[in-house]
Image (cartoon, rainbow, N blue to C red; front, side, top):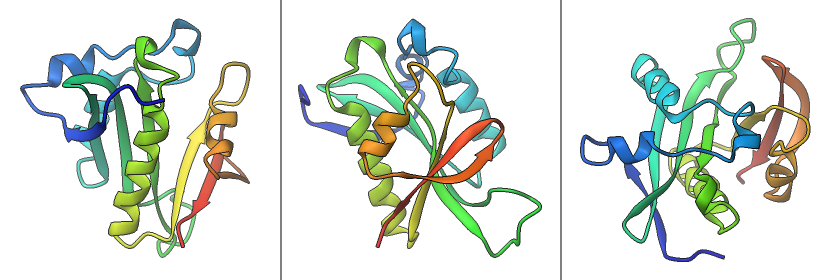
Amino acid sequence: MLSSTPHLAPVTADNFDAVCAVRVHPRQEHLVSPVVKSLAEAYVHGEAAWPRAVVAGGEVVGFVMAFMDIVWDPARDVRERRSGIWRLNIDAGHQGKGYGRFAVGAVVEELRRRGADRAYVTWHPGEDGPQPFYLGLGFSLTGESSGGQAVGVLPLS
């Protein structure tokens, strides 16, 4: 359960080092890119990226980055725009406390606020992967794959 009331905060000069210090459990490192790569991607894809620190009790406990209204696959019709979870990193010392669930819920609420009707997420399948976590939050497999990752969708209506 949540040990303190969490919130999402923009990544700023004041919390940058703490955000970059977020490290997932070693057995998960092959499943998710480090935060610093996410921040570089956010810089390069600024029009679509929504990076946020997950903060609880005044401490950065994780990082989440959403993507907003982008075309998932360039071969698809440009009218099919998607939004969702791009990256989720909860620090190893803070896992199992509900912060990941909170972060996904906060992104889902932001997507609803922006008018999205579905939220997407991708994950690497396999042992120690997040599939049970995302399915437990209501995401379902689409049957698609993106870069070798499974694609999940959550209806927001």
